[in-house]
Amino acid sequence: MPVTIRDIARATNYSIGTVSRALKNQDGLTERTRARIRAVAQQLGYDFGNLRQGEVRRIAFLLHRQHDTQSSSPFYLPVLHGAEEACRKRGIALSFVVVGPAEPVLDLVRVHQPDALLCAGFFEPELLGVLRETGKPLVLLDMRLPGYRSVNPDHQLGGYLATRHLIRQGRRRIAMLCGSLAHYSIHERSRGFRKALFEARMLADPELEIQLPSIGNPVANVRQAVEQLLALPQRPDALFCYNDSTALAAMACCLERGLKVPHDLAIVGFDDIGAAAQAVPPLSSISIDKEALGAVGVELLLDKGAPHPDQGLDQTLPVQLVVRESSNDD
Image (cartoon, rainbow, N blue to C red):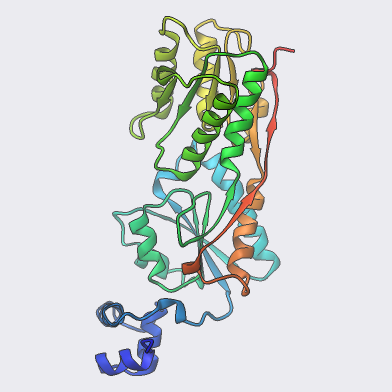
């Protein structure tokens, strides 16, 4: 027999109403009471998916602290705007919360009293597990994990289109700068890069693939990586970067070295942030409808016909290559 709220109430000697508020992470209880009830519920094997969700009136947009940077803002700020616009049309309040694994996440979130959660970018699985235990609808944006609902651009296709474009431009030593492959988006972009090389019967050269460190000055890290590539006996003639901020820093380094872009080194970025088109030369990039990413996340949270988050549901948004001067010799 499935465990019910009544069973938990009997085991904890609390009222059914108190147990219900604790399981739904609602206000009006001490943390000690809330923790005890939830612990007993887990011990008894209660299915948190049984919690009935009321009407969504407030959504918390959560951003991991590692993304709360100047280089990440040009991507995630439009995503936030897209979510905010979708909420405004429906009379829903949207709160913005920056969180990290070393912080009291539930306390930070509870202040805003959200009915549902949007998590943008990378989050540790353990941190997502804590958020999922609130029993609130939860959707991942720009990340994918088994068992969670998510909305993502077609990262792999983007990496593929960028690399195929460079190959069609006659480039044969194509390098890649990427971040941590623990990030779903970066891992998929890397897969697209390799897929294009494979289809062109070009071997992936480990010397041409550099994973940038996650600590230290981002611009300095890119410069060091570019210097490493240019010091090779056979330096690359093209460069695919996992995001535009990296591509712009790499291009600046190459121009300072006296290289001509794209004649000596063709460069393609990813995300098509505003600075890409304004760069000199303008940067080719993979365009993502970032506002749509946030808006579709809200729609998924509000879709009462969608499965509970524990059942999982993925949506993939299209991407397209925008060719500009940085990779086009014509």
